[in-house]
Length: 125
Length: 109
Image (tube, rainbow over all chains, first blue to last red; front, side, top):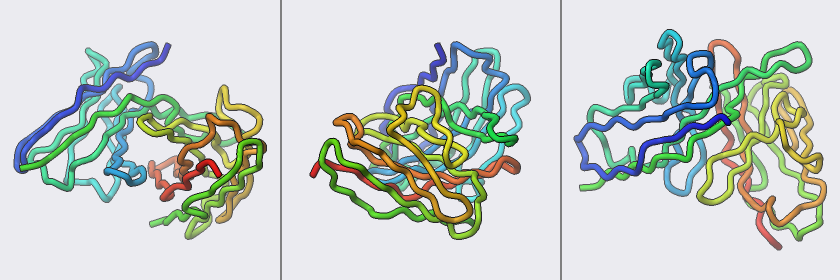
């Protein structure tokens, strides 16, 4: 069974650093991209970036480039999302999700098919 | 940058009725369009990709249509478990890019 298990909720102060994790199991972790998605309180979904754990190739949404760092440790099947200096506006639920390219009608459709349970990050002084 | 819009923001429907949700892209995304369902306190769930292909395990009452800039998600007969927020998402294979719409909340009338 494919599972993505994320680390627990965090409460931090502005300016602090943070690294949250997403551990994959039940599939070949190095063969699928992992993405991160932000959901601010009461708001919609925003794609942040993706990483290919096989070689750590990482791509960021322009909106998040330079704001966060995505990494992975394939030896323990875990992806990470980190901040060097948190802001109150980083308060949100963060989801990791597996990106699967599904073939249909002669095209590949990259889709987030399995999701973690989410990690709530609260940044408050 | 492609901007996705969805209408209506909220749709009130009685159980057993049909629900029609709309999604529009600011420029053509061909058929690179997916729909996700999110229930309170849960992660999103993939429903439809390629504008009209149901994901594994998704009931046949969910159907997607459209191409280019105009898309529709139809739920033929709403069940109690279908009351949720629905997001459309455009995607680009390479370079990777994913943009979600603001969502449509389907609630009980």
